[in-house]
Structures are given as structure tokens and as C-alpha cells.
Length: 100
Image (tube, rainbow, N blue to C red; front, side, top):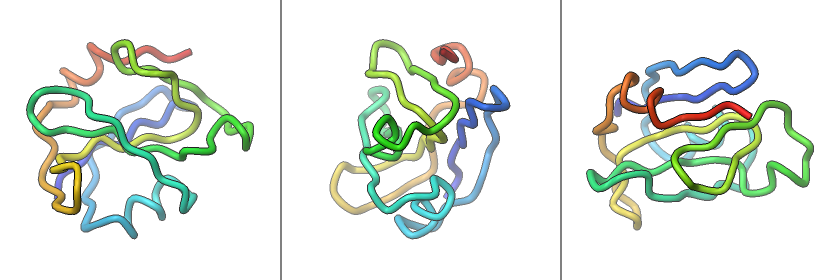
């Protein structure tokens, strides 16, 4: 499925392919994955739940969500177990994203 990878250290957004939670964990680099909804179209932000405890470099914030440290992935999700292509475009995400 099409997803958007946020890399705050390089201040970039990249389209990637994700097939499930194992891919998310691999890209983020940790098993402690948390998610928050980021819009009305079923997109969720996936990130390392312990990012601030680890002292991960690079921070970002989408809209008014709590800031995140380290990489993030935006992917379509039903909130339970079904993943789908991300609905928002790279440009839309860039307009809602702040690097801290």
C-alpha cells in the first residue's frame, strides 16, 4: 500500500510501499508503534511510542497533534487491522507539517 514517510532529520516526505505492521516497525526502527488519526479520510500517523524516551533525533508535528520525534508514516487504516493506501498527497501533508 502507498504510504508517506516523514523523515524530520532531512525534512523530507517520501512515498513508500508498506504491506503491513512488520514493514511499519522496520521503517520506523522500533516495535513500540503508536498511531493517531490525521484526517477525515482514514489516514493515520504511525510513530515510535517511546520516541522521546529514546532521545530520537528530528521532530515534527502534524496540525495540533502532539509532536513526534523520529520517523513517521502516514497510511490509510481502519483503526483496527486493515491497512489501505494513504488518501492525502505529499503536498497536502507538507502543508500540514511543521518541523521542530
